[in-house]
Length: 126
Image (tube, rainbow, N blue to C red; front, top):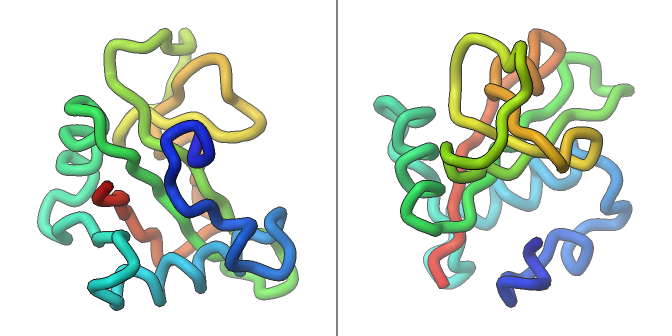
C-alpha cells in the first residue's frame, strides 16, 4: 500500500522488512524527525485519532514491539471504518488490516493482543 500511495516504505529503511521490531525502531526514529514525513498521532485518544485520520484518507499505521525481544512485534494499517469487517472483530481500537488479514478489517485489540508493548500510532503526511 505504501508503494501505491508513493510513501517511503519500510523495506527501504530496515534490514529485514519482516521484523516488526525493526519497523518499530524505524517509526520511532521517523516520528522524531520533522523531515521524515511521519507524524505521531496525538497521544490523548490516539486510537480515536488514528481512525479519524484513516477515515479522511491519511496513511496510518500501528506498530508495536514484542514483549519478548526474541519474538516479532506487529504492524498493521489503519483502514477506513466503512470497509468490510469480520464478524468477531475485537472490542476496541481502530479498524486495521495486516498481511495475515488484508481482506477484512479487525479491531486493533484483536490484531495486536497482549504479546506486544509500546504501541505507536503514526501517519504519513504526504
